[in-house]
Length: 172
Length: 437
Image (tube, rainbow over all chains, first blue to last red; front, side, top):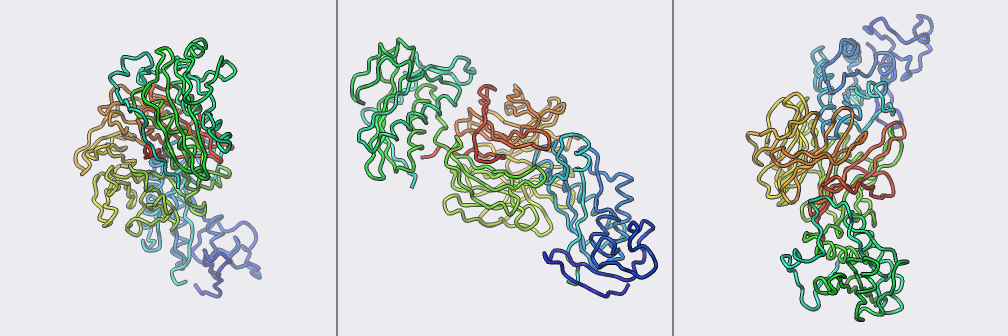
């Protein structure tokens, strides 16, 4: 892999690496744009840039979901984490914080502890797939940061999650 | 600044045994169905500067008493006569005629920034005063505290128990939509007055907890990006983070009654256990070591035991262990999940949150788990805190759906008198401080 550019976005939270040779990224590339083999019109850092955080979030999948009051990874969750692990092993310049979340059906303290279990389940899986422990941290938000606001299972299922949030690179 | 001085004039008769014989008596534990009728005519202004305050004082006193659920105010429109002056003889017949069993009379003088409040409590049907008159002096900005002190004295003389009106609550003030909620620490009088903010809302803050003396607050903040415990001095609003091991998360702190120790939860990897820390030295001791979740610890008033929640049985239940750790015994056995236990300041009951069949409840049980009593039911009730006299519980109620909002509520330990506490924004995670001096 050859690093060509490296830039900081304004907030300084993410180090975005642009890479001309996105090897080892599995079959499900970004939809349409940028996937062609012709002249690469990929904007570095955009969702079409397979080394970008945006690509990780949208195409690899940054989150896994859990059953009610559970922190066991589902088969779908493991598949997503397999993709995350492969990506992280390729894009070694990134570290990540894994956020554990719970739905609102629980007390605040218990949900913090449950979120820690979920985040750690994702972390442990990534480590088992070869991602260095030093690149990963976990944090639990309990039920404090829902992404869906309805009080039905459809929303709760989206909120019971562990999200891998890419952060500044190791060398940055 | 808001200090209030109190002394008795005449003889201070704290004769509880004698009170028990009198007709003016409320037994709180029995659950009051018929509130006691009382009247509190506007206090007498002793100078022109006191006119407005005289009216306001009587309104706050009335709101305290009525708000307790134990008293019912007789409106001034029913009065036959009003006292001509503070020292004029009370026309008991006029108050008996409108069935005012208790009558509170008072006077107030304002001199510059100084306020002097005097009051008497009358047992109307006995044609006599109940206890001696009292007077309080303080500064003008502390006038509400003087009203609360009068109400506490009335409550105490009639129930034989300590009051709770001159107390403060620290809580989380919430604003913004559910998926972008902003939270900041706030402190207020127990009735929602005099709200002051203790933090900004740049960092998520959770679950503030008062020390036994009300001088400090423990809370959890995400200031560093990770949950970590802070201790804040209420007077100076200075705060500092407690000792913390990098890569761990700490939350759910509560003070030991001695104010020098804190008990809290620490998450290392997937496991959450309970630890105790000496606040001064930062030395921590691990109190539980199981692979399950142990959290929400709360000390007994004598500091010898800790009640906490654990899912070691497979679901959230309540346990009690010695404050030095060691074997824990399970105390909750009902249907459902139990969390956030809090030991009553009287030592006799544990308040908790219960989740059962899709509903949340605030409840109380005895220390051995017997006599479980659910006081509330809603989509989401949680996080009880005790009034300083152990007779009222404040908690968070959150409504469901996209527009869901958190509000503080209070309820008495018999399950009566459920009422919202008015706050400027949404409110959650209340912690009720001690009766002030």
